[in-house]
Image: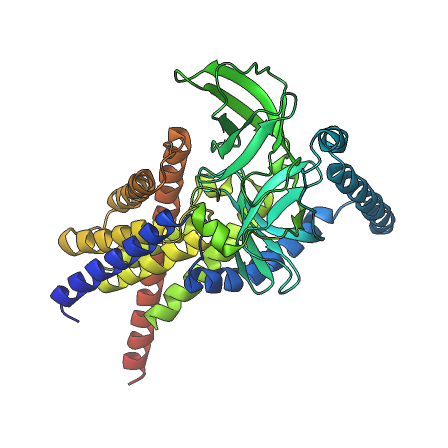
Length: 281
Length: 172
């Protein structure tokens, strides 16, 4: 192939990738490419194998028998704790909701669907673009399903390929979630701040915000259910003329995650989604 | 044959990446094996191989990151093509010059990714400059190691070939 042809091919490759990028920028929550799905499907088993071997290597040392017994007991206890925490999460804010329900008879809260547990085989929570790959039973998970851990919100599914699902962590710079301050129920938008932190935007200066206030999902974005813990406010600064600049530390320690839960949720009908282009995170 | 070798190298890079991430959460910030492999491949001076290798390595990186798919694909295609074009024009034989090429390639990749992100994602912030420096340095060191390793292997193979040829002549 002549140098001239190669230069043309170079330009075509760059333009093609730019078009792919532009399409994604226009539709942040839209369909992902088949190429990406194929690569995730190829890389998933390798990541899974490495994770298994890594766990085995880390587990070596100490008495194997004792380790087994303790591991089994630990597994059971953790499962029990996870179950209880999930239960507690489901009931989060129920008292307040009941009070509100009694005040507004027309109020109807969307019901939660089934919860699917998923093992993390790859997680990158330190770099610029933060993501995780989880293993789920085939066909059990769809794009845009919320992902939580027992401590709170983890992110949402952005791509499903076979048994593997790619999860955009809530701390990713391009992630955003409809959220509210739990104390006064003032709604805003939580955005990934990179470097492991979050930012809570669109909270008016008139609202009293305290360091230590808990932030939970507001259930207004069509993806995340209400009441899932997002994080704790660590810094409040007067930002623009209208809104506070609020820094939030996530309630989930991503460095300790090895298992997450994918929440089943009734998706918004397409015709409604079409009318609300900014509703997606 | 060359494409197969490159694919195998990418596979090894992928496994090393997963192993690194398993034990060190900061691994992806500090080391990019895919970039090292693609620059090493492009140093041969073939722009076609450099460009396609860069594209493949970049898309693999994209599959492992949460951002827009194609961000690293674009950057690595530019880096692969640029490195190969540079290698065609300059003689890169000294270890210090190869170290420089790997470092510059890593820096160029970060600049392209940042520029693209700023254009596509409204809330983009620049990455931590210290980690970028670490990434550039590790890319340089790893690349230099690969480069020296290949040179040593080539000289060994060469000397083995010479000794084999001289023995056959001696036998006559």
